[in-house]
Image 1 (tube, protein in one colour):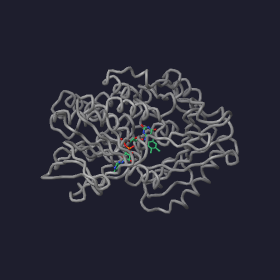
Image 2 (cartoon, protein in one colour; image 1 turned 180 degrees about the vertical axis):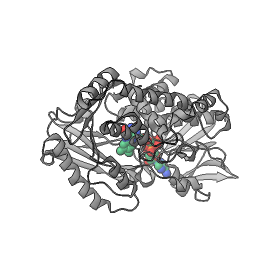
Image 3 (cartoon, protein in one colour; image 1 turned 135 degrees about the vertical axis):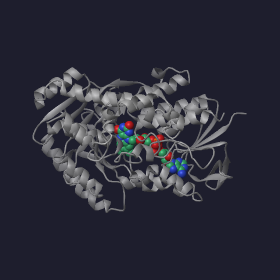
Image 4 (cartoon, helix red, strand yellow; image 1 turned 90 degrees about the horizontal axis):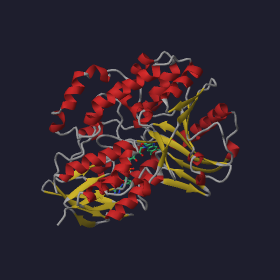
Length: 489
Ligand SMILES: Cc1cc2nc3c(=O)[nH]c(=O)nc-3n(C[C@H](O)[C@H](O)[C@H](O)COP(=O)(O)OP(=O)(O)OC[C@H]3O[C@@H](n4cnc5c(N)ncnc54)[C@H](O)[C@@H]3O)c2cc1C
């Protein structure tokens, strides 16, 4: 008889794990507290508008394809995407406009024309990013770093020999400043720290690996929107026979003789051989493992940033905007300092994502669905209602200045998510988007392992544990966890 596994939560990491375990011959049941699957990777609708609720930037699509291939299915028959030629439009208040093209020669020409940046500088920093990826990607992203065998390998030796190239002891900002005199380019590359909710003035230069994902492997748009990542993988899992229980909140992980033996859902016991939590690691310990001591690193680790998002139905079309658009703040350092102090800067960098540019059904004709996001600190009991009102005023003024418009009368529908509601929808502690931040050098080591060192048969998968947050890393988290579990079959 095959072993039974229970997964708590149905975030993208959990769905991917359920597929992997099922293809390895395990029985898999998923318990999800919401009445929908996908966690942060879900959607919001309002009248004739549809919005992807969380992630909007899709990189490394082959990690999704891999799951269909594991199940001997053709990914293209169920899930498709197109590569973006123009990855993102950037706006500065002095009138500078920049398009970040995937094609490096085209992007270099754009930088030469718009910012007078000599050819070669972009290639240089991207090669640096590639080297960091090649030296550390296999060790830190594709394996459990909490197992000794990971450290006895040729890959580790190779990385150690070129350790100085990793820029571990510098901040991302310092590394970027060493590459460019141009402040706008430093800001451009600093922004990659926000891809895992970190602060470029604190995060280690090793995080300069992130641009490699976007500018080497490319950025993509899933046909039908980001929600199709969740939907197509959920359907695949169901075809394979994974059982999903919705409206099923797990209230306890049952432990006997230091061994996980199942979960309690609404007071009812469900036994299993293996339990995996896809719930954020902090509440997993605090709420589901009350009798166990929460590891001190889980308590102490700094949370990643959260977000304030306005989902606006806009009754006009803006040809100067594309799928991804950034309106940069004037003082980037101040913006992160304010966040570190739990506040929102009065001139925040604004990210506008408009999926209706690619998927026309997301908005009525001649209208657009705007996902307007700023990075904000995680919830620490701040007066969010007052902060949101003020931020909305500042955001509207900044959009009006940059796009030479008056946006307020064009907003015909509005939904809002803030750190409190993100936490309510996903149980993510403080509403952080990416689990823990990478603001110190040891962040990768302090992030929780994919298994419990104290409780047998208990595992963890998703954005708050190794290797970290964001869709690609959550999918890798599923891969690492599945490999750890497959030995138990
Ligand atoms: C606004 C926003 C923007 C983002 N932008 C990007 C982006 O552009 N690109 C990118 O790659 N990533 C982005 N991310 C991050 C990405 O969404 C996450 O890293 C990823 O989706 C997290 O997946 P996960 O597997 O950790 O599970 P989560 O999505 O965190 O889901 C956890 C699930 O567990 C369920 N759960 C919790 N407790 C229980 C319980 N007790 N019982 C049962 N179920 C429970 C929750 O309801 C939830 O469904 C963004 C996130 C947000 C919120």
